[in-house]
Image 1 (cartoon, rainbow, N blue to C red):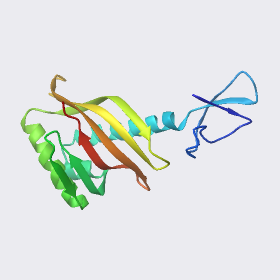
Image 2: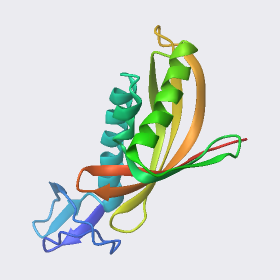
Image 3: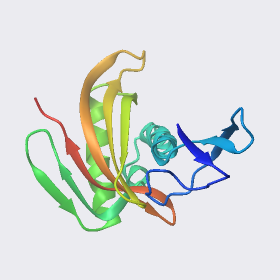
Image 4: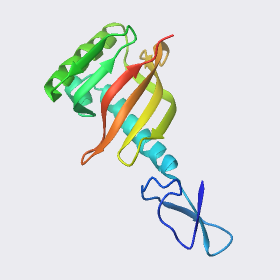
Length: 165
């Protein structure tokens, strides 16, 4: 929580991101505001909530709408892939979700979200993913980081890294 005096409306970390007034403090001239990191965390949380909803459709092109082209992915085996168009990103994710569905996955969830601002329009987000059977039991989990950028359509992923070890 950042504290602003005399109605300041920008984060005190000098990132320049507008902030949201959260509540008035005891003194009239003192206002507690959400920091850019708190705002970012909420924004990224909403992004991944929508990602989970798209994932449940097992539709690669729908998932690809959350990505910017070009997009690069580094998987857990150290293989780096580059996708230059939305169509290629959609094809890639269709292959991924087809495989997940084949092994019994019916949904996913994330936890342990961390979001770090990287200037005004980008961020690094890290989550732990869990693939789930229809009964909610876990099939597999892993940690993954995402480079995000703000676009006119909201946050978009332009790079991802699966954590290994």
